Amino acid sequence: TLLSAPEATIIGPASLAAADAATPTALDLKPRRRSGWALKQVASPGTEPRYVLRNTRTSAYLQLTERDRFLWDLMDGDHRVRDLLFAYSREYGQLALPRIQQLIDQLNGAGLLARAPGETEAGRRTAKDRVIAAMLRMELAVAGLDGGVERIYGRLGWVLFTRVGIAIILLTAIAGLLLFATASGHARLFDVGGAGVLGAVLAFAAYTLSLVVHEMAHALATKSYGRRVPRGGLMVMMGMPYAFVDTTDMWFEGRGPRIMVSLAGPIATAAMAAFFAAGAALLPSHVAAGVCFQVAFALYINTLFNFNPLIPLDGYYALSDWLGMPRLREEAGAYFRRGIWRDLRSGRRPGPAQVGLAVYGMVSVVGMMGFLLLGVFSWTSRLGPLVHSHVPAPFDTIILVAGLLFLFFPIWYFPVLKLTRRVRRQMNREVSSVELETKPG
Image (cartoon, rainbow, N blue to C red; front, side, top):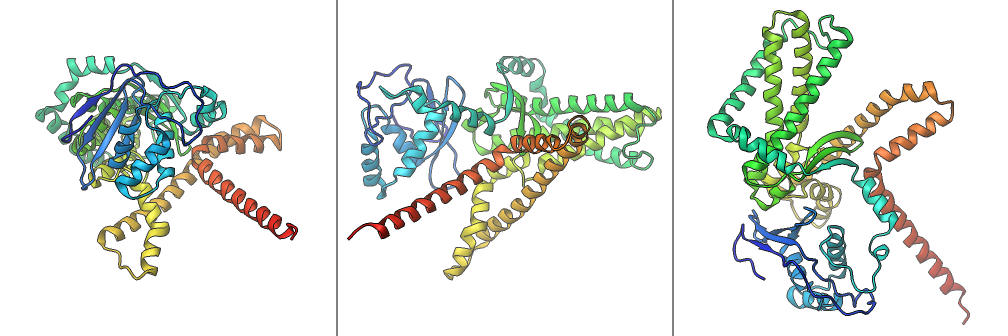
């Protein structure tokens, strides 16, 4: 199986032969590709090729490096993990068992490897693993959206992605800023012109509709490149709720189209804000203009928030694609915490790219902490009074703390797990040293 050029696609076979019926040890396991996969080489800004591997049954995706691809090609059910280890050593001059084990875990998680003979499902993924995976990926998703999005795009949505359609949307967004500035001269924030509860409900409904338009823009942009949108729904990220549509099929496209899909959402939100800004500036009714102004203000804040490259939303994904660094936040954070200090201690002078990476890492860490504090404040300010008024002390505090721990589980789980493992290793070393000291003779 070979890929000779970017954008070529390989489709995996529909069935594979069964392997031997023996229960292997870890090094004697024979990882075997499961049926139903697609592999594509995508354009890479660097010298090392990059690939996207897709499970065609579940639409799960993995990004692979050239070295990962080398290992994937060997997972045919005939090669043991031991064979992979030595083949990798011959090819790249390294014994990389942790890398091989990590790749096998990722492939198992994406459902891309068949279960080994004699290996139980519980051995592959226990109930505890499934619960933790669900808590790490808090989402309520609806599958089967692709057909509906396809029909919307085919009947009307395609017009929005013509040159004329794009120009109209951009001009509308720009005009909206001028209209919002005009409305700001007479409208006041949080003043719905005496509309009361009805005005607040209308403003919330209009804002929610605009969020639907935002996600639909991502979906239709994905369709404009002929890609699938298998699902969408709600998710909790860093303790805050968000709507989403699954556009991971865009990994089979180049970075330019991926950037366009990322930017489609906030640009659509800005265009929606322009309509409400027009209502705030031009409507004669003080009540209607007041409601429109609140919605426009909220949508402009939403647009800025989504363009923010410091948190993993649309602006961040566009920036990481532009730089060709899919793990920009992780790499920048790691370089800021360790890499730049190691370079300085060894006398190596960081270049402009390294300095920029360190600055981004520092700013993103500070921004992330601020965002987390905002999330904690938002939940405690909304739920705190409700819990305190209905639950006696100290159970009210226990419930609030437990709720926050649950909502922020994806954030604290891995640092706590890493710390726990480090403490356990240290304790094991201390026990071993004590045993050596007390050993007779």
